[in-house]
Image 1 (cartoon, rainbow, N blue to C red):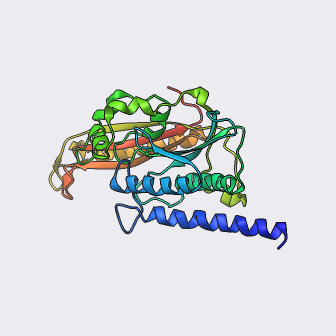
Image 2 (image 1 turned 45 degrees about the horizontal axis):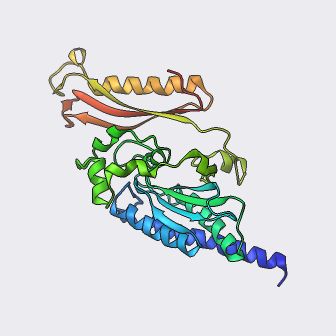
Image 3 (image 1 turned 90 degrees about the vertical axis):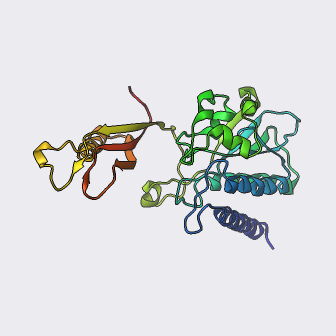
Length: 303
């Protein structure tokens, strides 16, 4: 077998392994019919364990840090050398795609696996991190994993609760972690030489252009707002239109305005109303209150 043929076969085997592992991770979901895996859930901890096994098989030293990130290190030529950090997140949104985040972790493991098979060590160490939370699906606060690594985790986050009333602090305890040790996840900048993440596009641009790869030029800033519209509930059949204070109608007009203003600004600015709840929430009652979320992302944020 020629070197060219052998290398092609090895690349195809590595790609098949990544796809198969993505399928195994996708099976770790709180729902059977759609992929959902949230921060510090049993499924998240199972994913950490599985990814940790793959890291270890690739020759890495493996640990779970104090905020629930799964981490691995492949030492460089010089022990203790600064590391090139690779990876992505292992949590998901609800009804997620199986490559969002996971692809970056699995592809990074393949890089280290290749070096390990060849017995090669680089000038820099390689570390891989599977961040426990990027999406913010469970607690409504995002980037808990990376904020732990950068040492910028606000103390107020510990009291934030999920929809079941479980706080972040209690979730940490339930997962076998100590809320008092959050700061231990922080890494010193001198220990990290660079960060590189492979990620799916999550948009149509590359596909429409027939391109396989794009290079990120900037990271969008993001802001999330919880908004409340207060009106006056009333009977839908008896309150005349001119006398109504319909919170949902007001919210709908506001949402259309958000859409129009965002389009007018152009560029890479995007805005999304992703959740909306009406109260009292009956078919024959005028909404008296609406709660919704607004997600704004742009390369540059202006107040």
